[in-house]
Amino acid sequence: MPRRYYSNNINMWSSIFELVAFLTLIQIAAAQCSYSMLQELTKSYVSSRLTGQISALSTAVYTENFKAATIQNSVHSQALRIDHNRSLHDTTQCATYTELIITDSRHPYVIGTQMRYTPEGQLTQIDSLVTDAGDWLFNATGTLYWATREDWSPIPEARRDSRAVIKAGADAYLDLFSNKSTVVPWGTPCARLEGGSYTGQGRPTDSCNLGVPSRVVYMANRRYVLDETVGAVDVFLSFGDCTTGRPDSHEFRLEGGKLRFIHTITMMDPRCGGLPSEACLCRPT
Image (cartoon, rainbow, N blue to C red):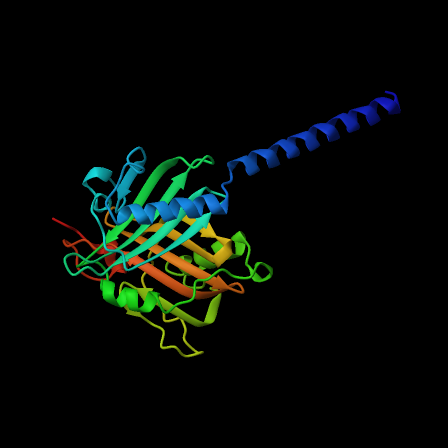
């Protein structure tokens, strides 16, 4: 067969591969949202919680504590006195995560919400963890005190970790519960906020490496919202891969590839006592 045929054939396939790669890049770019748009959406979400206005939320699929629910009968339909809020904005997945702290003595809450959008900004999915009295180490006043003393401000662009590094850091921490030999990128200092309980003491030697349960605990069904701008990722998961696993949120901030802050929100089952790590030992009647 003539050499020219092979040459033309190679050039044709090269052009096809280049076209496919180009179209893939266009598709990826089209799936992304702008950071400013997501910021406006979280701003609107928070402001509407002050009045209990749910019209902008009512067309989305809603789950509360990992169970199907109706937004009209949820905490979102109530006017909330919000003491503190902070959000993550994931432009790659068109998703956000918002932490709300409400210390209102009539009914305090700590609420974590992941929201997912189309590239045009249409809300499609709302998943909320709503914790109050009886949930793991719940103390909204304590949560507010410690959360407002942490620095989750944007990281200079030249020092930002990649999405892969941030996600890997979170996964390493969560994997440690089932594989005790996992290497975790511990940072120093590092502080962990579980409910209203805080491990940090304001010292440069503060550590989050305080041990995990000796039993094997699977942190399953992970769903991520990741914001490279602030070096953070929130992970919704089941604390214990079983029917009685606890609905849970673990939020991480990394700086220089190392864990700096960890926030947890964990639902408890009044039928089952013990630690969240003992969820799969529960036999509710």
